[in-house]
Length: 188
Length: 154
Length: 117
Image (cartoon, rainbow over all chains, first blue to last red; front, side):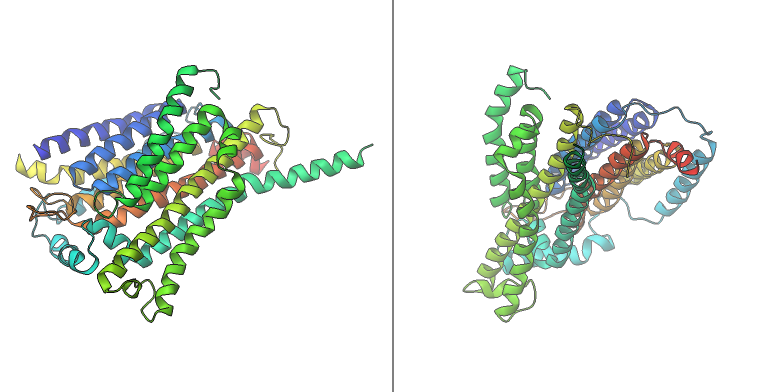
């Protein structure tokens, strides 16, 4: 049953991706991307990643869509017709895909408990978390305590991204407005 | 924006406290269920963004002033990094929370709570600042402000 | 049948990855390029989360009565990656808005032509 739900959701994801490639109206693209994020969140639920699913639903379907709509409001909503033939990009994409499929041959199967990945450090965290931190949600304890350096780094990256947006979108405007006021003051 | 749609306005006013409460639940219940600072921060920001989309960015700026948001962005990082320094001063490694409590487990629990609050503050205020930046531009362009959205560049 | 089920996650991951790559390479519109990058990024999330799943296991929240849990480590890595992803997406969108203000277009070949003139 788990695998059936997984397969249906993954098929829908692939179909939406094809839809995003073909649609030229950017509003439709953004709405499809929102649907894509919700489906991805559902897949994550099936894969037992409840924390990640929650984040993807809030971030991917919520904030990203708002951001993209905001950007569309300030730019154009229709994509221009392609000028060049799609053969070369298609060749590059299909070639990359073939290489990646070749790479999956040696990967362990889906859902097995005895793969190298699932017997290593992840199991160690599951065993130690309760005794060392008293927190049942292992994702939280690994995120904030065992891998606190990582999370600090990620927080700083978010901080930097926010500062970058503020510099790009507000600092220039303020400078121009100041310049405009000065022109007005000296005009009469 | 959509200031004239009465259904939206009423529904948003009803939803707003629920979303904020849910964000707090996700924040403080993150130790025992799915959730944590990242999710709660995004949910809290989404509440204000929803308000801003229906009532206009100016109204949202009255609820959470831009100056406050810009102060909170570095404050969250400071809380996180400062927790690490506090651990150093108490004689442990950087970002080791064990000395905060009477025994190591209590210390870890408290440290994780503080760190998650730091993450919450930075994530929610950054999302809000980004929304204000985009929304402010859009409102200026709507109002016909010649200083925003003109095509001449620098 | 079980063979197909065992690898369907990897195949769909690759389809999404290639789809995202194709959008980035073949489409000139910068907003669409960013959406394509987002698809590429989510395919990487799937690549990380799929092998961490243990069939019959449950979410890694310790509770009485459960013995088998999925691997929590990829969840932690991807959780932070998603939030960083939206910060970088916002940065990209801000750049697109500024490019539109400077050139009046967000198609990369048109911007290139204007630069050449």
